[in-house]
Length: 114
Ligand code: AMP
Image (cartoon, rainbow, N blue to C red; front, side, top):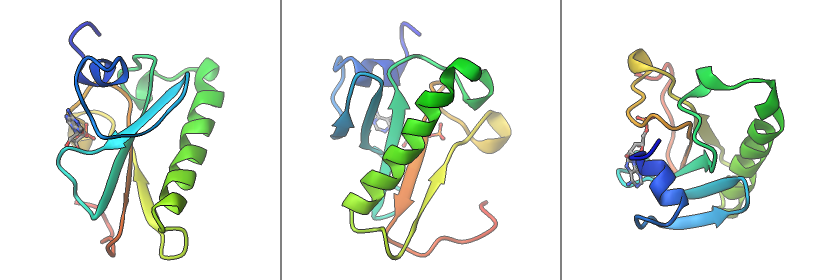
């Protein structure tokens, strides 16, 4: 937790292109965007992955998903659509050990994901 890069972004110890913040959630642009719009939504609480959620996080996760929809709509993606992704663990390619929701849009997405 002490050297978690996303905790440091949430705490403004390192810069990021913030697009939203409140007492529970922070959203910012991904440093290595994989689509014309690529934002990350993180909880301020250090939760290592989706697999570390418990029932006490249900409201937080609901808010994060609703924020994803609101931010995507704000980027003009409401009609064409967008994708919300959570990578959990090494097989999924999770590279930062702090729960985050990718919000990707602005291009056609392939399926299945690689
Ligand atoms: P994941 O591979 O699902 O764990 O996603 C981690 C994401 O964090 C990647 O898309 C990275 O490009 C992004 N990322 C890593 N460091 C930063 C940073 N300092 N600012 C913004 N995005 C970052």
